Length: 150
Ligand SMILES: [Zn+2]
Image 1 (cartoon, rainbow, N blue to C red):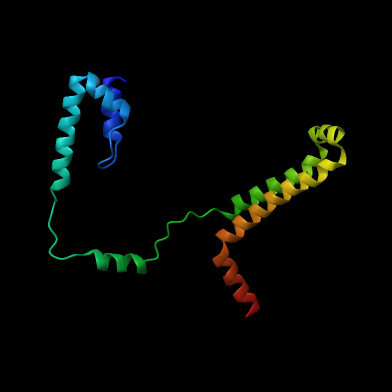
Image 2 (tube, helix red, strand yellow):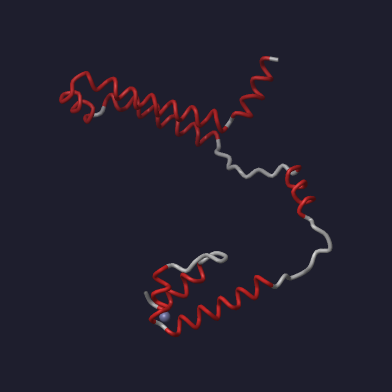
């Protein structure tokens, strides 16, 4: 390990994370890096102990209540176009596999006993796709069901 790599690995560490073994070995051999990393650690420790400002009262409870009431969402939306295109790919794969040379070759080797496992695998892929779609859109589906059936 070179000196630049050792310093870079140290700088990539998160708060109080232990030094990787390779960096420790390098520090044993290299006096320059040992001093540099100790100096950087000392500076980081001083910065951790120093607070930029003091709060007069604890704001954690009001902040938690604000965050609970806010409608900030951390989940990613996947557009319907992407969902639909994945579904089309799966379905067209199911249809196109019947015309493939590889399937014909496999059927020559294994006979018609290949149909059941192939359909099980494709059925599982479709089921997993449908479960993922329903699971990620359960709120919208509830609203739609409420709209039409109540
Ligand atoms: Zn070094």
